[in-house]
Length: 277
Image (cartoon, rainbow, N blue to C red):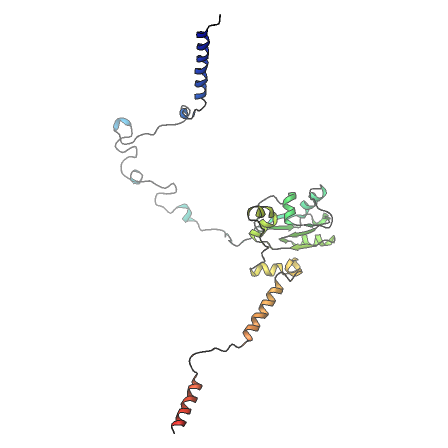
């Protein structure tokens, strides 16, 4: 039969189980490493019976007993890294371009992986979007001539550089190639302008080449440089600035000084002598 004491006892027992399970939900206070996974530290210099007393297992005297020896130390003889001369050269000013072959462009066009129409321009941004370029871009993209004999993609190409054979293959089918300069910041803004818009609210302007070798390269018609095709980008402003500077040099500026010149002082002295006479 049902009785009040039995009911309260059952309820109290269930409450204790609930509290116990709730308390065990957090085990952070009972965490410990698995048995055998760690090893205690051996105390040194605590008597002969410890096995590491007196000299602490280092033996008597010598460099190893008194101090630490670097892993590369060879006992005092000339070390390996000094026995042989330095070889090679790392150029800090080298340019690293991602190479794209014409054969790869042809393959992507045949499989419909380039979302452009006939006559459009294949820029570096489009190359990244469609997967022609997958690695990190440092200074731009260079077009190589591998597969030039079978190349027939009806697209104009804009890249950082291109070999002479690759340019010839592109122009052979009636298309154009343009070599365009990009700075480190400019190539990032060209490929992902939305990132700059979200973070800064604007896209950086395209930088013009400042080094002499870059100006000469992108001004060379044989390289199909964009400065040679549009002189208003760099050459016309430079010529205008040089002309203005030459005009300023021609202008004679009279220097006004608080001191009198020697001729003026001489004329005043002659006038004073004439007045006294």
